[in-house]
Amino acid sequence: MAELDLERAKGLIGSARDLFEMKDLTGVAGLAYQAFESAVMVLLKIKNGGDKRSHFARRKRAKELMAAYNDTIDELWDIRNLDFYGNARIGEEARKITEEEVKRCLEDVEEIIKEIEGILDDE
Image (cartoon, rainbow, N blue to C red):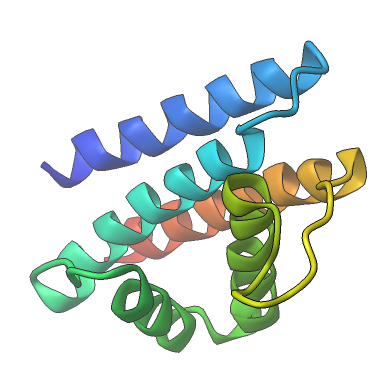
């Protein structure tokens, strides 16, 4: 099952990358975030024996396991929210996500997926 989730993560980030290259930015950061979550689910299944059942708990545990990416994971969450809702947090002013933010999100998720693959290879 873990292999399936990792393949799903790779497929999601591949789809997000394809859309980005076609300049169709709507939903790309959210799709990239889903790829991140799928990869994190694999990591948690291997390290914890199971997945966390909420975005918050999953993100918190991912930050514990990959401390070097704490700021990146927080930024991914904010960009995901911008893509889905138009603002990073409830009550903040709405704004449009930028192409640079989407690009950075894609690159960060691709890097994190590779990092998770490396962690799993060491197991």
